Length: 231
Image (cartoon, rainbow, N blue to C red; front, side, top):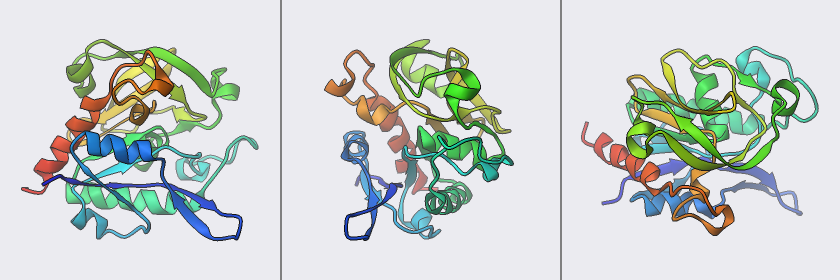
C-alpha cells in the first residue's frame, strides 16, 4: 500500500469569485513517482496527521513577516495569511505525531519560521540576488541526508523571492549557493526541506534541462512516511 502524503496548495479566486485551492500537478506526480499517494489538504485540521503518513509543504507566496518578528519590508512581499493559518498548525500536528515532513521553496521557509528562524523578505533588496537564478549548482554538506543521497554537488533550479536568514534551532544547513541557504534538515526529527523545486526535476523534466533527477529525494521521504505508520 502506498503511503498517503498530504500536500498543501495555493489559494486563489476564479472569475466568479469562488475561492480555489490549487496545486500544480508536478507535485502530485512527483509524490506518486516516489511511491506515495498524494492527498490535497484544504483545512488546518490536525486529523490530517492521523490519516496521512507524511506532509509535503509546497511552494507559493511569501510568509507574513510578523511570524518571525518583523514588519513588511516593501510592496514586493506578497502574502497569503489564510495559507499561513493552514500550514503552521498542520506542520505542528505532523511534528507532534512524529510523522515525516518534506518542504519545498516556501515550505522550507515555513519550517524554519515555525521552529524560530527568520527569513530574508526580499532577496534582491537584502542580498542583491535575483528571484530566479535559473539552473545552478549547490554545494551539499557532508554528514547530511542530502549528501548521502546526492554527494557533494547537485544541479538545481531556483525560483524564489524569500530565503532562510537565521536557521532555526535544531536544524542544520544541508546545502548552499552563493551565500543563500538551499536546504535544511532537523538534527533528530524526520523534517527536511529544499529551496529549489525538485518536483520539476523528476526524470530531468524538459522544463529544467540540465538539472539532476530528484526522484530519489521524494522516494527517500516517502520511504520514511511508509515507516511512520508502524510506530
